[in-house]
Structure formats: C-alpha cells, structure tokens
Image 1 (spheres, rainbow, N blue to C red):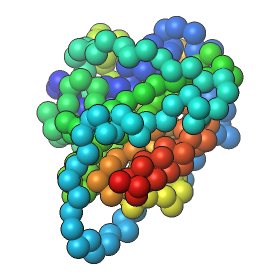
Image 2: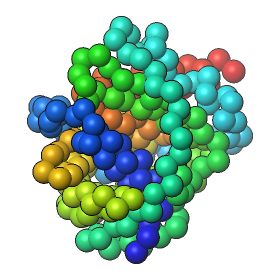
Image 3: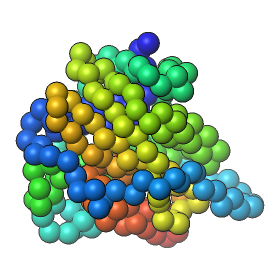
Image 4: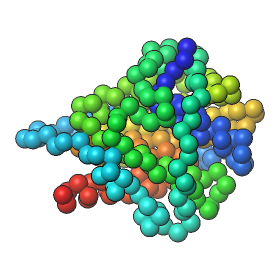
Length: 235
C-alpha cells in the first residue's frame, strides 16, 4: 500500500541519497545503541497549559554552526520530495496509513528544521527538527510512529521506485526531557549499506528530533534539548 509516514520518508530518502552519492560504508558499530528502549514518561501536574509555539519561534531555537562547533556547515534547504512511498513486510506500518504527513515532516503544523554536514566524513550528516503542539498530541503522535517503525525488525521501503531494505531496532536514550524515543535504522540499497539514528525528545510542548550519523546524533541531542529548554524558560 502507499504509505505517508514522515520518518520512513525522510530517513529513507536520506539513505537513498547517501548510498547513491558519496557514502563510503557503514557507520561504526560502536556508535550504535541497540538495547531495548521504549518511550519513557515523566508526567507532571501543570497548573496551566502553555500555547504551542509558532514556526518562527521554533526556528530561533534550532542549533546553529556556533552551537555545533568547528567543522559543521549548514546545508541549504532542499526542495520537498514527493516520491510515492510503499512499505511491505510490516503490518503495523501499513496500519499507519495516512496518519503522517507526505512531505517528509511529522504531522504537526508548527515546525522548523536545519541540516548540517560535518567535515569529519563524507557521509556525516545531522539534522534537527522542532515541532510544537499540545503535550498530549506530541506524545501520542510520535509514540505511535516510533512504535510502528521498530515493531518489525526488517521490512522493505520503495521510495520513488528505489527498493530499500530496512533493519530497525530500538535505541537507548539518556534521561533528558519528559519523554524520549530512539531508533537505529540500517538501510541497504543495491548492495551498499548505511546506518542512521534518530532520537526524539519531548520537553513540554516542544518535540526535538535529531537524525543522522549515530555518533553525531549522540553528540548533539543534549545541546538541542538544552537550547529549547533555556529559550523557553527565559520567556
């Protein structure tokens, strides 16, 4: 069936580009954290519910070159991909159907995104996405997608006619934010493989998603969450 699933679309498209271009191999196994990890909640009793942040407000909370350090270059925004995406071999992903957006972003209207390359390797990239909505909507929406994506250890994604073999596993996420999710995905295309990690952290009514090379995701997810938290606390 045709599937409009944000994370499948964005990471699978990134895998196709990496494997078809200058990617030279698989990320080091030492970078991976494949021990089981589910969403972890730490719910509090809030006297008031803050309004979701606008896309403009979220953009000011994105990491920039100075936050990441030397060797990082921000990538220009790429045109949105409109490839058809089909998933086979994973019924939970099939059941998501049209519940997620088709344009490579999670189904929350308030969002901002930045992508960076790192001089340390030709296939070293990291991307950050910020979303804002009510805490309940963020929690349920993201949890459903992450749970579906790691419910099957292997499946196939067809992106714009390119078949991709996917191996998925939950990943550990350190105790930051109020809820967190992690996954490691291995993509195989035409005999070549690449590994990508994705970590999502909800802090209040903002969702921080960091994706890309496993080592870079681990290195910068805390910075991303801290920048959002500090900016929110000073308002």
